[in-house]
Image 1 (cartoon, rainbow, N blue to C red):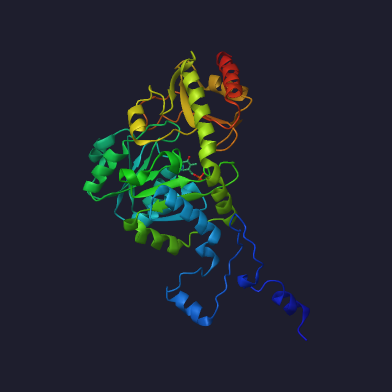
Image 2 (cartoon, rainbow, N blue to C red):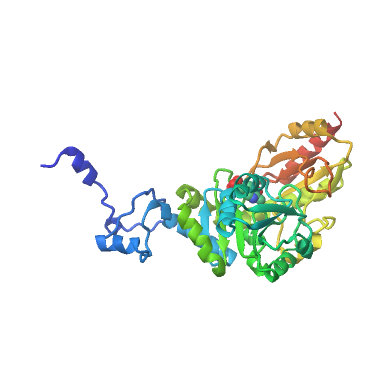
Length: 390
Ligand SMILES: *Cc1c(COP(=O)(O)O)cnc(C)c1O
């Protein structure tokens, strides 16, 4: 007679999924696993020798994670996708995979801010130097290339300031110099821009934004070409990169409705942006689909849509206090970071001050347009603009 504790461990489910009832769930199950069981010792040995294509341990991910990764791979038209616990970790892992001591990294100056911190605090420590190039330099990227430049990181449009990069011009130069390129494709989503059609080697997303779409998930992906696969996969295996399984499940669910959500976000944002252009306090609206946007022609050539986040620049007489009054007066816009969710959000800052000369040190207000009725959003922004004067 075995002790109760032994009986409890052996009870219920023994890991043999063939014993489960036929239950064809329309969505993939979420698996909670550190241990995954092998059929035999021989199978475990084959896994140790790298000759096993099943899952060996929880850090391999799970079928839920694979399902999401394969959906992203196919949507992007890449060779292999890996999910990461956040968008930033996708970016920093890609940089670790392809750079080594002595290398030089080029990053567009409109890049997502925390990337600069990673370059300064981590890459520099391992002997990788980083410098920044103007996001709108196009083929002039050549002027910034050094003999030891190995990697170029683009983001189009740029976070906060929405410069559109001439990606084909940059990748043409990069290929000529044997330099790899990655792009942060978060704004366009996999629907509005296809990096691999424009010569990019690695496409990165913060899935946290539109793909998950409900402000309750942190997740990232990096998708690579076949030529980049080996170096990328080696890094993923070495760091045992995996993503939270609930997040993968929610991201896959988000992907199903991405197109219809995005259409609504996009239409409302463009309407609000067009209306804002006509408001007296506004100097410029930074939205790539507006004809007045400096790189509108490039956007039109390369993208098939514009998503729902943009910025506007106030006339020079409006300083910090006016911006504070405006932001606090908004009733429908939450004050907070991130974007791509159902609720409209606002942030503001002098994003341009250090690297981007186009707007000097002017105040920039960024609006993430949610799924509220656009006329209500317009009315809210209108009443808040009246508060700029105090
Ligand atoms: C939010 C964001 C990231 C980082 O994503 P997290 O999932 O929040 O880490 C990277 N790039 C861009 C353009 C972003 O907006």
